Length: 350
Image (cartoon, rainbow, N blue to C red; front, top):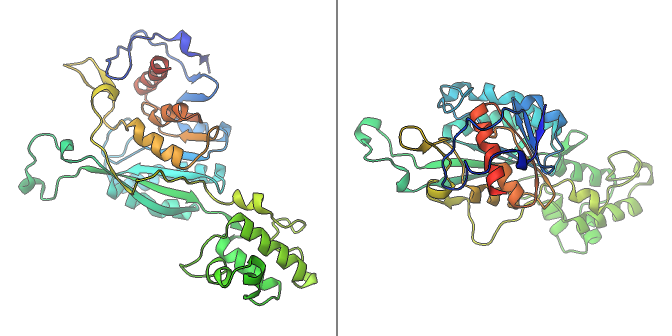
């Protein structure tokens, strides 16, 4: 594979609101500027070489024949995604968040596969494009449904397990092993009833203890629990986990002020929309995502310097947002035209 820096590519063909010609773009397989790595090919060939992801932004098959390799309907989407999901699970950590873009029926079809490979559903977010998304008049008598103006961006986290137990189950098991009454957990944390009611609950009211509370429970358990069972709250049988270890068992999330799970955002058009000069000027990619939404999900689930994966790159909008928010990114795209357009996007903007 060859590596090219921005300076080796032409700088006048793509930009916000500009059209593009491709005859001057070189055919390459890998573009990098050190922080961003873009690959031409199947992402399954690269997952094992990429750095561990904090964020995965999936914007692949919708089942509408929208790009090379896409499926013709939603029935085969689960099969299409499964090898990717399996690979994501092998490379993810408890701090990894997956943002799964798709249609309502596409997401519903893939959801069981995500769960099977350890991805826990958190929230379904709706991109409401508004009535401006409806092109011309829609004959509802013919389509026999309300016009669709939405896409889904569903948040998943990789479910951490210890001894094949969820953290909820593991916390309860470890406390029971101490031989101490459950109420002693309240004493350990210096609270009236929160530890038993939330941290050791085995139902839907369970609440993951903050790091400082977890460390108090660990210290108390190893000081007053049955000596024969020590150490308690240990993964290796030698050393108990501490607050720093516990922080790493949870995905990152920072909700910006004023946002909900409905994102009212007009369809992408104008300056940011990448176009090609064919008959008139048409959009280069039918499903190009807005950079502001990509920045939103990346900043909400990672810190500066963290790694973002974009397995189905398209025009590399997630990677571009990662660059703008000071993250690192690894991405791949099968289609050579999209790949070259994506490279030139980086070249023009940066």
